[in-house]
Image (tube, rainbow, N blue to C red; front, side, top):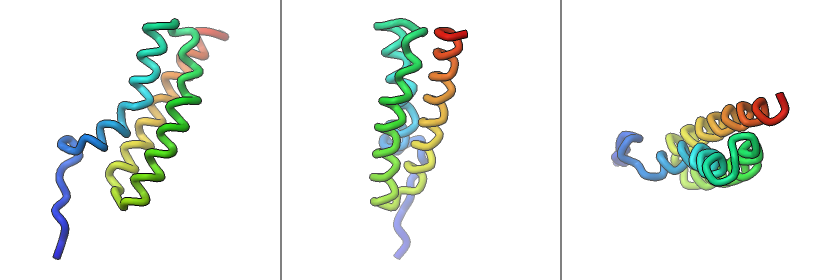
Length: 87
């Protein structure tokens, strides 16, 4: 029997994995400043890493892949904030 796999748009775990780092960066930018939000990668990267491990443990490959994309987006936003702060 093949398990039904829904499209990633309808899976809330995919959205959590994809947007968690971006949401942390946005909240830090709003409440602190965009120049300080580069540190969001420490939080977003660590949370994303554990979400990735959980997704792999449950064999949710789509969630794991989108979590890695979310970590990459968070890294790009953190680099932008670092450029604002130190550039």
